[in-house]
Picture 1 (spheres, rainbow, N blue to C red):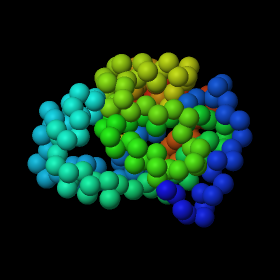
Picture 2 (cartoon, one colour):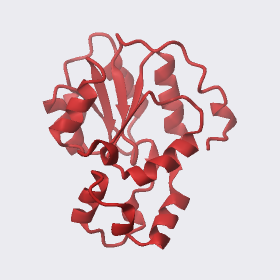
Picture 3 (cartoon, rainbow, N blue to C red):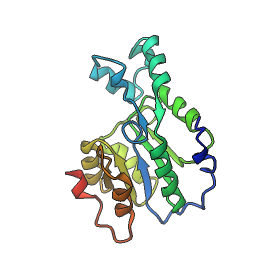
Picture 4 (cartoon, rainbow, N blue to C red):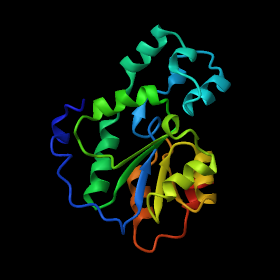
Length: 198
């Protein structure tokens, strides 16, 4: 649960506007860390694909010790949550759009507590499809006429662009807030930030 004093008023936001773009933040690599790969030394990518779309349970993915270790170290980035809060304060609705096991999502929800930051939870483990599958982007497009996707994976940014969404690459060491605000500015160029996607 968020206990930092800076977030005590996160739930006090103006009414969100359906006229403004929905901002869809990725989870691991953008709002939270670490990746499960840092716990599991030699990942089986086929099992991971099946877990992230909900085709298998977590017990079929790794042992209980690894599961407990991941839950213990999974943390939300307070600097990025502050960014989400500032974007919400501008009237944008917020989606969490992630390739993530549904079994782990409860941990994130618990740690966010009642901060009221997320309007839509779009998790591959619940949806049954994962980024960069076009059906994942179609689901986001069903939530809003304009969507800005923030992701740390360039392949996902490019796939979002192809699907007609705007992409903002959360590249390591970059000024994510400046890039995001540029993409949200009135008259921002087209359905993708091509400078960031390439």
